[in-house]
Amino acid sequence: MKMRFMLTFLSVAAMGAVAHASTEDAWVAFRIEVAKVCMALPDVPKNAAIVVSPFGSESFGTALISSITDGVLEQQVCIFRKAEHTAELASPFAPAP
Image (cartoon, rainbow, N blue to C red; front, side):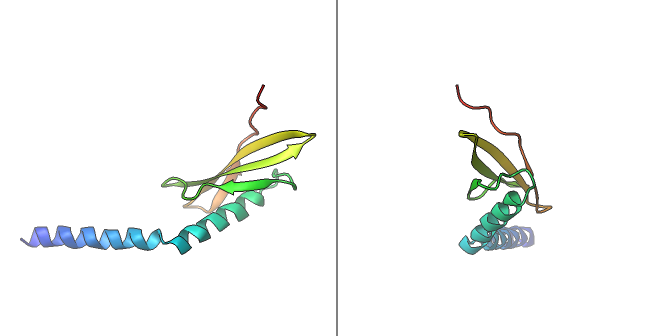
């Protein structure tokens, strides 16, 4: 009986923590942070636009950074580490044939 109560209590407590962490305000703040950190990376072109994945994965946030260089669309992925609040930029995708 005590074990069942404890498991129920822990389950309810965990759900509250998950719900608290995933409020709309928290996700908006997350997306703003991902955009800010990614756009501040030194290799991001000045004319770049960014689209942030709304939730990312359990460990990472992701964003697609697009820019026009010499008339050609360049796209790169920014990977944001949630635990460290740091990011890195992947090399640009090759242009489509």
